Image 1 (cartoon, rainbow, N blue to C red):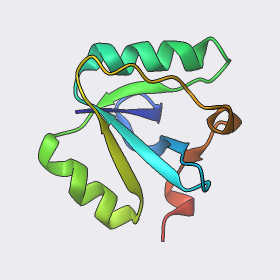
Image 2: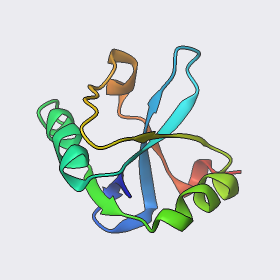
Image 3: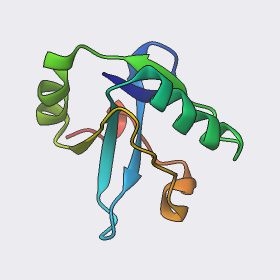
Image 4: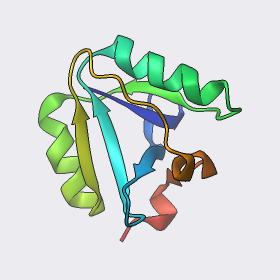
Length: 98
């Protein structure tokens, strides 16, 4: 699995999240690296400086349980685009964790 982080390869640097319709942060995990890169490229075009970072599949749920954040999994070939609300550059860093 892959997710977007503030610093390359460093999950503890801050994790990028989109928001749902109620404004709840949702960490997006991508099954395929190419899909994560495509999403990141759209964000980079909007001056968002984040990086694709790999995480072990078995760590996904543990990570979200520890941080208390919801998550979604973007399956291979799913096309997702950043929502306007997400463009506020929502980075969940360890200072904001419970």
